[in-house]
Every structure is written in C-alpha cells, then in structure tokens.
Length: 225
View (tube, rainbow, N blue to C red):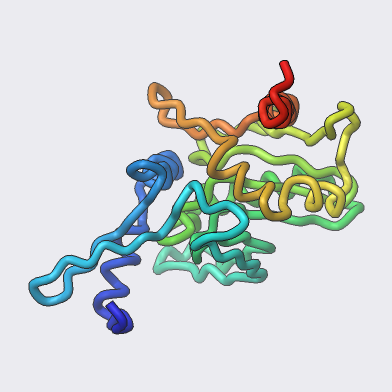
C-alpha cells in the first residue's frame, strides 16, 4: 500500500517463511492457484503479500539472485561449527537451490557429505528451510537431488544430467548452462518437482522425464502428434 514494511512487520514475514521441513516449504510454494502469499497484520488491516507466483517464470514478479559464502553461525551448542554455504540461488529472496562445491581433486561425494553435515547440524533453518534442490560438484562431476532431511538423504539418490540426445552433462559449467540458468532452474522448482504426500518428500524429475515433457509441449504448439 505504498508504505514500506516496518521491522516488526518483516519479522512476521520471516516467521511465516520458516518451515518444519523442506516438504512443507514445497507444499507452501504450490500456493493457492499457483500463488503463495504471506499475511502481515498492520493495525486493523491484514495485508496479503505475494511471495511466489508459479506462472511467473523468467519475468513477471520473479526476481533472481545469487549469493555465495553465506555464513551460518553456530548456536550455543559447542559441538556445532560456523559454516559457509558455497553458492545459493534465490527466487524472490527465497533460497531454493543450494550448491556445494569441491576442487577437482576431491570426489564430489565429499560435497554431498558436506550437505549431509549441514542438515544434521540443523543449518537449513529459517529462510533456508525453503531449499528445494541440492547440487554437488567437483567441477568435472555434477549431480543434483531433492532437498530432504539428513536421515532421508542417500548418495544413490543423486542424479546426473543428460541432454536431449542422452549425452551426459557432467561439467559444472555445462550443467549450470543447462539446468541452473533461467528459466531452467525456476522450472525445476516450480514445474518439474513433485510432492509425495504419503512419504512427505520432494521428488525432482529426472532429465529424460523433463525432456519428454518439453518435447510434448513443443509438439503441441504446432499441432504435431
């Protein structure tokens, strides 16, 4: 309504963007008719603010940002450590894709283990409870998986990427051009993810499934079988 949010009003927003699980964050992102809102109490008025619109991919109300070296400080637990997240991709200020990187001479599995450690330590809290996708890479090998609790993550769930001709795309920078650019990254979160209600888990589609969907879309535009 033309007036900036106060600090206390913004606290209301942040409190509503803290989720008990990645799955619950994903369920919220689905929204009502594809629109996810938060509410702010301002005096006697209730303001409804649009946070995420699934139809606004590569335009509309969507804003894309990249941050690196976000520092997650340890709590009072002496066993915890201060952590630095390598790279995080944000849509409308929400950290939705977390990328953990290792050097070429380090197995990419170590990047997966790093994410596992963060999850065990409870680092994905607050706004970072919104994360929907993890990416791990040592530059030469790059994989992705859906965000999940540490006791539900499994190394075998990691998926590589292949192009439309079924050729592997393992290099980090080629993977980024194929999967992490816009609109591809946004579509992965908003269109190519499935919520398993029974198991309370996020499922990210595999490359061949995504290519099949895109092929059907392309054919439908020109009336092709």
